[in-house]
Image 1: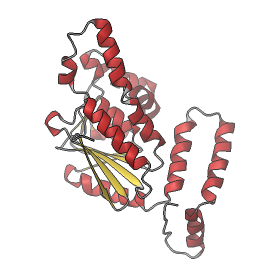
Image 2: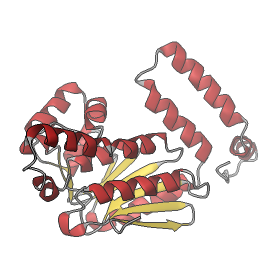
Image 3: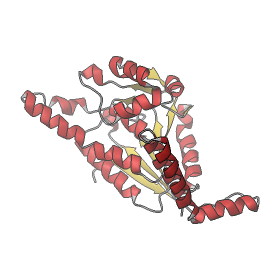
Image 4: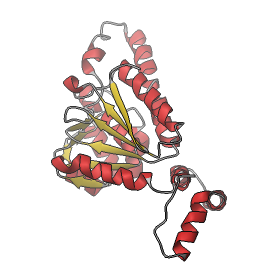
Amino acid sequence: MGDTIITSVDGSIATITLNRPKVLNALNADLVDDLFHSLSRFENQQNVRCLIIRGNGGHFMAGGDLKSFSEELDREPEERRRYFELFVGKVHPIIQAMRRMPKPIIASVNGAAGGFGMSLMMACDLVVAAENTIFTMAYSNIGTSPDGSSTWFLPRIVGLRKAMELALLADRFDAKEAENLGLVNKVVAADKLNEYVDKLAERLACGPTHAFGNTKLLLNKSFDSALDSQLQAEAESFADCASTDDFKEGITSFIEKRKAVFSGK
C-alpha cells in the first residue's frame, strides 16, 4: 500500500485518513487502490468494530484529481472514453466494500467535500460535518455526469427533485443545509469535530457489532425489497442475532438492570 492513505487502529476503532493534503485529498489511481486495500483489510479484521474515514490537511476530499485528468485529454475521444470508464470502474469495489462492511463507518467531514468526496461520504453509514464544510456535486462544472454511486445515494437521501438540483446546478452549500437535507447527521464546530467523532465511534465500537451488521444489511436492501420479503429478512436476521452472545448479554443485562457489556460476538 502507498502513502495516499494513513491507517491506524486504537482499540476496536480503525481510522482511514485520506492523505493527499496538497491537492485537498483529490482522488487519483493510487488513492483508489490504497483506499480499497485499507477497507478490505478492516472488513475482515475481527477486532475492528467501527471505522472512521477522514481527510488530512483540513479537507475531506475535493473530488477527482483534475490535473491527472488533464494529462489524458490528448487521447482520441474513443480511447479517452475507454480510459475513464476503466478509471471510474475501479472505484466501484470501494463503495461495494463499504456497503457490505459488517460494522459501522463514520465519515468525519470538513473543508471541501465535492464530487467523489460526496459519493464517499454518502456511502458511509453516519456523517458528522464541521461547520466550515462546503459541499458540491461539482461534476457538471467539468462537463461530466456523477459517478461513485452518488446517483444511487443522492435521490434516496434527499429525494429526486432536490437531487436533480444538486447534480445539475452543482451549487455549493454549507453544512447546515447538508444537515437539513439529511446528507449529514450532525454538524459541530470545526475544533470539536475529531472529539465528537471519536466519542461516537467509541459508542458504536462498544455496541452489538453483529446486530449492527445485520441492521446495515436490512436497511441497505430495503429499497429494493417487497414488504413480504423484507419482513421475512427481518425475522431471519432477528433469529440470527438471537443466537449470539451479545443477544444473551443484552437480555440478561436488562433483567439485571445494568448496562450491557457487548463483545461484538
